[in-house]
Every structure is written in structure tokens, then in C-alpha cells.
Length: 268
Image (cartoon, rainbow, N blue to C red; front, side):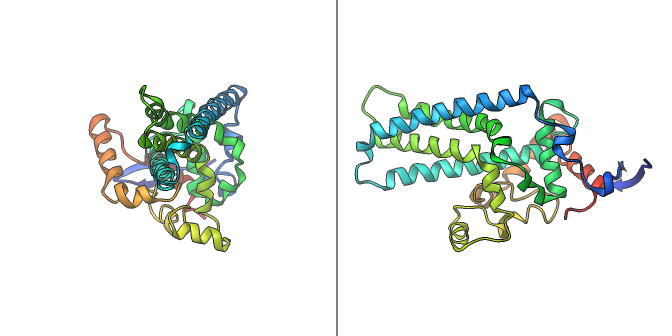
């Protein structure tokens, strides 16, 4: 296969390697989920389900704390949703920006995000069970501080602790299924209810998310509803993180992602 070298990114030359018929490889062709990988997924799903179930039981036992104050669980869910949106953005930014598709432990996830940039519609090939187990580990990790705070202390359960448990359940669930939320940012056909939820910043909207795909894939990273992008993202969070990492280790952001663009052309 002939390789053509092209000018790329500040004078660096990289090979342009055409894929089969110009198409990026299928993730399962280059990095199928192994038996060990399936076990990791299963373990994450079981642990996350158990922790979330315990948190729901805690909420039911202490539902008198909420009483008629419906704002309490709503506030907890809002905090959890924002935390999940921010977490999804940081995870997305991390894999978009730094990892290389030759790094074995994260190779499958890197291939998924690189492939998605080149051929966004391929995201609909992935089922919930394909990635929810792995994302359960992240959901559990982010929810654990909320759960710990909710059940800490010897005194009776306070409204703030109750709301913290609601936030934990919310963030654990939304991070686990964030790729399903992400798909709403690519759905051309939507009913009235999804459109209403997107206008209300409950669901990710294509109008907002597709800006991520219209340029250098360096904005609008968040996958739940984009509120963290509209706040911390607009304040420069991701650029500050990139500059800090570059100064510390000398790594160049999005190098591998741009190499894929050279290999397989513009997204379509």
C-alpha cells in the first residue's frame, strides 16, 4: 500500500494511509472485546448496580426527609446531572485529546472515539451492553463520594444528605448510559417530547453537539445535556487543562485524532 506524506500541524509530516475503500476500520475488527474485557464490564455493571440499589433503598427508607418538599430530590437530580455532564465531557476530552490508538489498555475506547469522528453515524452500531459495563466503573467512582456523604454521620438523615444520595443515583445512572444520551445528539428524526427535553437542557441536542464535529473536535465535549460546556467549557476549562498537561509533559493535544483525519479523510 503506497503511503503519501502530507503537510500536517505546524510543519510535522505524517503518513496518509488509506483504509479499505477509504473507510476507517471497524472497532471490532481491530479490537474485539475479549473474554477478560467482558469480565471487567460485567464486574463494573454488578458493582454499580449493587451500589445504586443500596442508594435507592436508602432513599426509600428515608423518604420522610423529603416529605412534601419536592425541590429536595429535584435539586439532587440537578446536581447529579451537572456532575454527570461534566464527567462525560472530561472523559470525552481525555480520549479525544491525549490517548493514542496503539496504547493497549485503552485501545478499544480510542478506536471508538476516532472512528466516531470520521464516521459519526457508526455510533448507532453500538448497543448498551457493549460499553455500559465499562462506563459503570466511572459512574460508580463519581457517585461514591455522594453516597459516602449521604450515609456518613450518626445523626438523623439531613435534607442535604438525602439530596446527595439522589445526586449519586443520578450521576451513576447517567454516566453509565452516557453513550445512549450521546446518540440523541446525532438523531435527525425526533418527536415532540425529545425536542422539548432538548430545549429544556435535559437531553443533548444535535444543534449543540454537532459543533463538536464541525471543526477540530475541540469544543462541546459534554454528552448528557451540554450544560457543563456552556459554563465551565466556555470559561476555558479544557484549554487550561491542555496547556497545563503540555507544559508538564510536552504532549501535543489531538495529534492522534488529526492523524486519523489524514488517514481517512473528512467526516461524513
